[in-house]
Image (cartoon, rainbow, N blue to C red; front, side, top):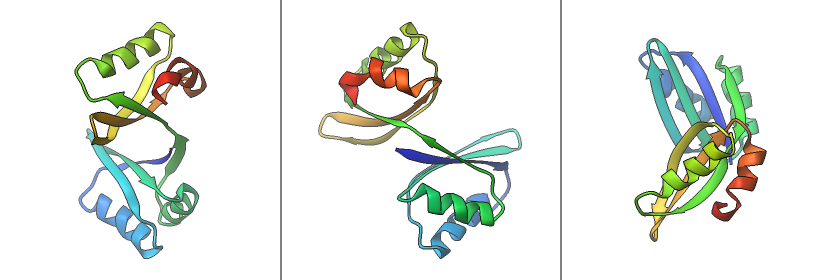
Length: 128
């Protein structure tokens, strides 16, 4: 799954400006997450075309990074995330970002970015 990450100065109207620029170019946001730390905002977006979205946002003055996340299917029960994160830790792979995209039918779909996605893909093959 491709994800765009925008790092910007946190301010009133930031998400409005980002979503407005994308909307004007007909780009639909499928997932959004915003975090703030001190005066910095980190915006994670999943859109249908990350190439088009990156072009739009760059033209609007935003600094974007395009990255590829792994998608994992986990049973929706206690301890499943612990199993996955332990497998990665034992393999020397650091989790940089993880979030739940969807939950249905006794499972959760997670998006995960690691220090070594190729190795993580091998370690977590049963969850892909």
